Image (cartoon, rainbow, N blue to C red):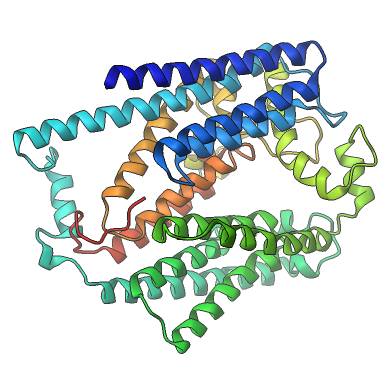
Length: 472
C-alpha cells in the first residue's frame, strides 16, 4: 500500500513538473496565453487530486495547489505591458517551492502515521519528553476528563474574547484616528489607508477580523441561540466589519469573511457550497464600493495597470493585476538583486516586534524590486529568495509544508474549538500566497500569537483528546 501511495505521489509531482516545463517552453516561444492556460489547468487538476484524496474544501495541499499555481497561470498570460518574460531562475523557484511544500507535507504525515502505529502497537499514549512542557500541558489541559471546561464555559469564554477583541480594536482605531486626524473612508487622498498607521497600535486595530470567525465558533459551541443572543452576535459582527470599511481596507474585509467561511466549513461539514458562493457574491459590491472610496477612478487604475487591451473592463483588470503582477515583481527581484541578505529579510518580524528596527534601521533598509512603484505586493517566496536564492526557496517550501501538516494534524486531535481558527489562518495565508510574504510579516505573527492566547484561555484545563471534538 505504501509503495502504491509513493508511486501515485511521484507520478503526480512528475506530471506537475512536466506541465510547468511545458508552460515555460510555450512562454519562451511567445505563446503566453497558452502557457498561462496550461498552468491554470494544472492548478485545477492538482486541487481536484488533493480534494478527492482528502475530501475537504480547504485541505492545505489542495489550497496551495490551486492558488499558487493558478496565480502563476494568470501572471504567465502577460496581459499587461508591465509583464516581462520570466527568467529561468524564476520558473525554477516557482516550481521548487511547490514541489518541496508537497514533499514536506507528505513526509511529515507519513512520519506521524508511523509514530502513531508504533505507539498503538506498544500500548502507549502520547509521550512528552520535556518535563517543563509536560507541566505546562497539564496546567493548560489538566490530567483528566473532569478538569476540562464544559461547553457552556467555553462558550462564555469565547464570547468574552469576542467582546475583548472588538473593544480593543475600536479603542486603537479611535486612537489612530485622533493622532492622524482623519478616517480613511472620509478622506479625499488616493492612498489614505497607507498613512493610517501608528506603529505597534495598528496590529490591534486590524485584529477585528477575528470577531466574525470567533462568532462562528461561539455558535458551534453554544448550540441553539435565542433572539437576544443572535442580536448581540450580529451587532458585534457588523461592528467588527465596520473597521476595515472605515479603514478602506478591502483585503482585511475579505480576510475576515474568508476566515469565517473556513472556520464554518470546519465546524459545520454539512454546509452547502451554494451558501458560501452567496456570501462571496454579497462581498463583491462592498469590494467595489471600497475601491471607489479609495478615490481610485478607472482612468487612474488603467494608467497604473497598463493593460495591453485598453478596453478590458476594470472589474476584470483589477483582480487580475491583484494576483498577476506579484509574480512579475518576483521576476524583477531575480533579475535585479545584486546580493542576498542571508536571513535579514525573513527576520523582519523579530526586528519589528522588538523595536530593533528603530534602534538599527540598517537591519531593515533594503530596496524592494517591483515593476512599478505603485504596485508593491509580492509573492510568498519573495523574502526567501532575497535571503538565500533558489536554495532558500526550496528550504522555505519544505519547512512550510512540514509546519502545515503539523497544524492540520493538531487541529484534528484537539478538542479546543479555537484550533479551527489556527487552521483557517494558515489556509488563508496559502490562499493569498500570491499576495505577500506572510511569514516574514510581523502582523502574521501578532495574529498567530493572539490566536494562541485565545486558544489557551478558552481551553484552559481542558483535556486535549475529548469526544465531540471538531474535526476536519
